[in-house]
Image 1 (cartoon, rainbow, N blue to C red):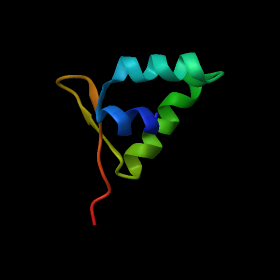
Image 2: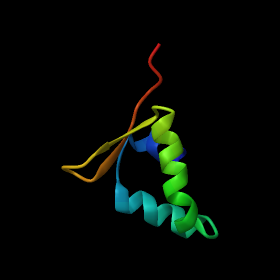
Image 3: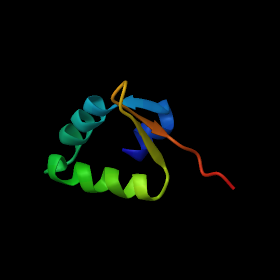
Length: 60
């Protein structure tokens, strides 16, 4: 997930979910906890109007 977000910076929620489901066994069960973890670390931000996830670079 993080690799895709770093590469594209802005990824639709559904596309990221599909990517995880296709590449990870039982990925649909791990998607939400992994996304929550990235959010808590401040690495992603969700944009509800466009249903997109945005990668946020670490700020000093």
